[in-house]
Length: 195
Length: 195
Image (cartoon, rainbow over all chains, first blue to last red):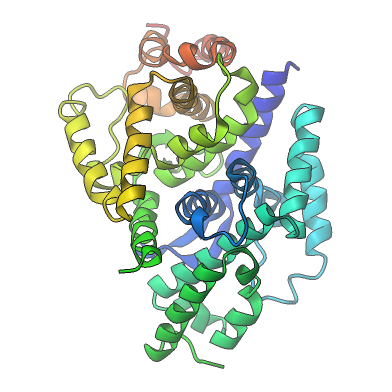
């Protein structure tokens, strides 16, 4: 296979990201958001909110992480943020998926995107911290826009949302502070209980 | 409104991109692809195929264009690539949409993203040429993967596909050459007539 044929094989496989559905509802149609459109919205958030990153970031690296961060879910599935039982073995399943799916690419690119995914997962670089913050802030916005329906369905409280997502503060503290005001308002409107 | 509130208003409005459906079918579920997941797949194509750009490009600018290029369709709707009647007045409708939707942002960002969209539309810079090439190559891939169903439904021939999309050659001639071999194969398999 030529490089372009390998790249096309990868790009074809990745179209399956549109078939992986998340818990959060889209505000207009109220259907569950899929991983492909979620990844796009994170990219839009990153370019819009980059000025609020706690540290200066290389935006290309942030965007690469956000574009590829959920591709492992093609094999491993989406793990709901508040489902602690489903999280057992999650990283191993996802690492195996990364091996297979990025492995469709020419070897140099497979290594590059695998490292990019691992950087995102480790959340230690400024780029990964900002990307991870955006990945936490987006479902909070969606849940608020849909009146908290999925939060109530799964028994999620504001205390749980804060505990699970507060590392967004490490990437973009000003946006996290804004999200906290939205969460307080959501509690006041009965979208989810405080605790 | 604070800057973050304005930015969140824009990000909320843009979630409607998931409600704009295109003609091309996704290969697994065979449902029509929406603009949000299309935009994500273009970003993935851009980072995967960047080495094939005819000219060196600033990848951040390419990605910004691809992330925002279809946002105007929230108001203007998707115009099918082979529907010449629907194209009348398309740019005016889209320019009006750009004014409204980017206008939700703080003024400096509204100007920046409006210019980014206009750069994409003009297809004169190396970044815009490469981004536009990717935007042309992706639906060809999807149509081939779905056996040409939508091409036949709309009476599209290989000659029409080449005429409509050949400016992809200005952005990434090696990938365009690959697409031409895929199109020849698609004709041989009866997915669409030659002319």
